[in-house]
Length: 89
Image (tube, rainbow, N blue to C red):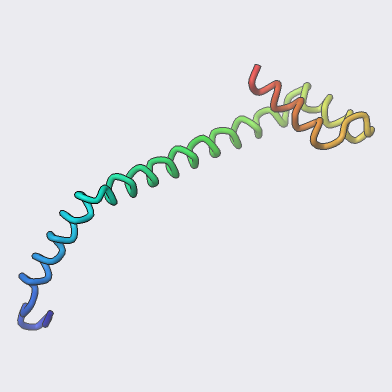
């Protein structure tokens, strides 16, 4: 295309339209949209879990689990499991 004259713009626009039709017919656009939605969902869930974890870190049960871990009655994985079990129930 030539910006100053507009030459080739119509041809480019036509090619873009044909490419879009091809993408739709092959299902590429639907798959790309689905991937974007999945990523958005994962981001939202992660953000909300982080917010919930932050609120749990100030609870008495968190302090109890943390103390048990520091005193080596629980390892960090066991402590995390206890905290996560508390989130679920």
